[in-house]
Image (cartoon, rainbow, N blue to C red; front, side, top):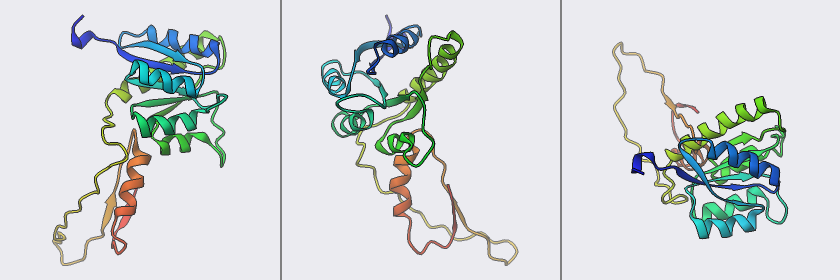
Length: 197
């Protein structure tokens, strides 16, 4: 097998044996990924990560013993790697785990299939595989040690003698909340510009 046809390794973490089976079948059914192992809780996941060194982890939010958010915190501090969170449903409220997971370093948040309905599984499967493909593009080396942004001052361009409106536009995608947490506080307090995120 050539390096270009190598399947990337994934650890599937979920307390439900049924969901581990469903997610494993989705991943193993792709040409790009293969499940290297499964874990039923956060403690088991951390052991499996150290033993198997998967490239990507799918991680359930709600689990006994050590939940998904706690496990994610350990993963990102001990052995950073791309993590895609899975949940039966996001609450959408003040305690929504989606935002907290992204703050902790998760790259995406995917709704788990709601049951054995094949249409739902196929739809969620396509979303999950797309998230895994995106996760491969992320470099997490030195996570937590992000370089401070450099700002380069340029003379304002003015062709009519009027002062130009100033704006700073910041775009973010996968890993954006973590990067924004570093960039926004580093902006000068006396910035004379609108900041668009």
